[in-house]
Amino acid sequence: MTPLRRQRDYRLLWGARTVSVTGSEVSKLAIPLTAVTLLTASPTEMGLLTAAASVPALVFGLQTGAIADRLTRHRPVMIACELVAGLAAATVPVAWLLGTLNVIWLIAVALVVGTASVLFRAVNFPHLAVIVSPDQRTEAMAGLQASYSVASVAGPGLAGLLVQLVTAPLAVLAEALSFLTSAVLLRSIRTPDRHEPAPSRGMWRDVTEGLRVSATHPVLRALLGAGITINFFAMTYMAVHMLYMVNTLGIPQGLIGALIAFSGLGGLLGAWVTTRLAGRYGANRVLLVSVLFFPAEVLIVGLLSGPLWWKLAVLAVSGTVTGGIVVAFSTCMGAIMLDEATPELRGRVNATTTFAVQGVMALGGLAGGLLAEWVGLRAVILISAAGIALSTLWIWASPLRPSRRGAPHGSRDATSSTARLDGPAV
Image (cartoon, rainbow, N blue to C red; front, side, top):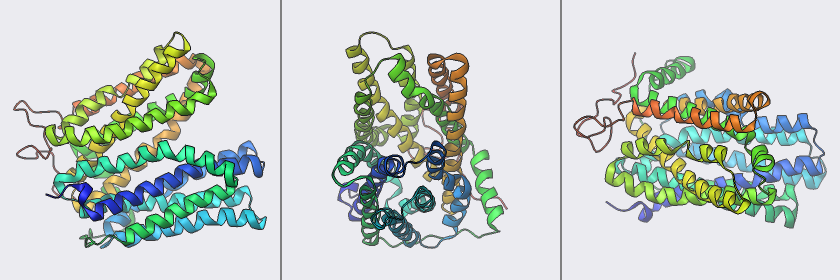
């Protein structure tokens, strides 16, 4: 079998995602800076601008999964999403040069780009199964996860450089160009784009079917429950993380960005290691082990003390390791979802999971902020570590756990898949 790194179409898909998400990382800094420094946005306007990025996932997330499962071809929709997002982003520098840019304009652009991104992700998930063979899905997922790690390392630095050189609104042009470049790369893929569409019984019933399958299939339910648990408590942690780092640990503000970059570097290393471990031991076993380490960094941060050099060293090491663990878990989770959901349900299963794990983040952030007012910053961090550890119960109590004969149920390296879904119920 030809290695993925030598498969032209996978390289094009990987390149498209890497370019696109790097451009998005640039805009995460450039657009808020434009609103604050050039448009003098109020706190309320900044709140609306921040919320606009996540609103499409909550409003359209479930429906996009049903749309993805109805399509006979996915790639044209992916290309259209990138073109729409690129054109929307390009209006920011144009409006700035014309003197018509305002916060409402930025919010509208965020909504359009966010909606295109939600639809793209829903369609891209089942499309990956067309590009790569079943035996290479874990490796393919690891490569795509590495794209996000590359973006998290390169994006902020590139954004800072562009803002300094050409001002914040013109820096958004990098995002527009990244979307357009992604569309060109996707257009160059030659693999036949064939998908057997699922029979539709109406949008609401299609969406409900995706919810039902995700909640009743034992493996998919475990992945969904673990994802919700991790994201909720991760956001309770993130809600107080910056305050705790600066006010309690005394970390200089200028070094926080450097510490974050270690997580991206760890993600690149994690993608490389995950591919090899999953090939040898199976994606299930890698998932089972990686989830055990999820709360480690949060717990370390909550218990950390000592001189500044020691804190920085510990945070750098733990951030690097956690970056790898997150990529390992996400990679194996995506590969197992592709295996466990039948082709006609992949879009809806992925959309349901994305909707749930993304939607719960807002609740987690709110809970973390309110809880900190009551019990303090360090207590919230320790509570978050304990909460994240609960995700282990979801995974280890599921059929993903190895059987007594040593083969994980539902894994590709087992002789049979006792947890596999046979098809949608009527």
